[in-house]
Amino acid sequence: MISTQTKSLTAELDAFIRMALHEDVRDGDHSSLACIPASSIGKANLLIKDNGILAGMEAAEYIFKHQDPEIQFVAYKQDGDLVSQGELAFTVSGNIQTILMLERLVLNVMQRMSGIATRTLALTSLIGDLPTKLLDTRKTTPGIRFLEKWAVRIGGGQNHRFGLFDMILLKDNHVDGAGGIEKAISATHAYLKEKNLGLKIEIETRNLDEVKQVLTLGGVDRILLDNFSPEDTRTAVQLIDKRFETEASGGMAEHNLREYALTGVDFISSSAMTHSVKSLDLSLKLAKG
Image (cartoon, rainbow, N blue to C red; front, side, top):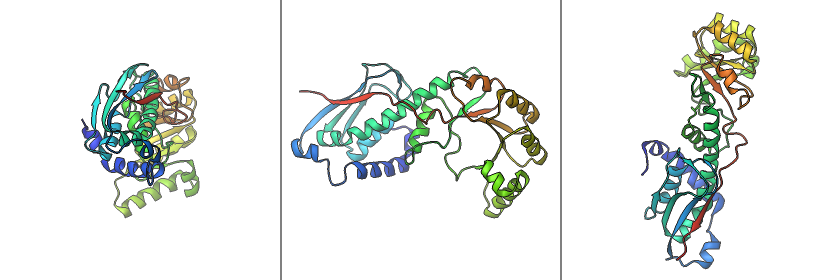
């Protein structure tokens, strides 16, 4: 069953499938075409060979049915389920040539998404009793950002901006390139007015003096505290005093996540959920007989 979430991503999924099949198949899966009759019908099982959080089930079903609407997909698990080695995630039945052609694409998607969801849950569980929310970043794999951010949500995290187009984030290079915090904020407001855009504005600060500058100037929605120590983060949060949203970033991972969340910051952004993540081990095997 394709959910509302998946339906909202059909354009991205369709474009991704076209790109992936061009990369992998081009003029044909000659291994399957060479030895398996075109009329062969069979069944394959998705076997779980690792412990973690399963993600990509809906994406997998969409990929199979996008290529062949006659394929039957029976799910035994769902996205977000805690799974263990030896369990069965789904069975897919239909044309064997099609199933084998899509095997690696489906596995690559699910293994990557499940790895991200597993890491995300491990991180969010460290601060689950606190109001601070964990955000991902744009440090994603080009071409599959939508899948990786989808996996973050499955694992219990939240998405930061999707890209450069849906939020203003004035980072240190923008501030320096504009000639300072005041000029960067002023120019941004003029630009948004000229373009008739209603984007939220976040600005990165590198120290408490820059935080104080932003507090004096205003004109933003969120203040990013980049590479602040936990002590300075707590001081900044107290200075800001809920006038603006606060976000901590820079080297956030298991060893320090809770310490930063205890400062009272609204959000923590981390690339740990999508960067250098270990994929979950999965395997698709044809059923014999």
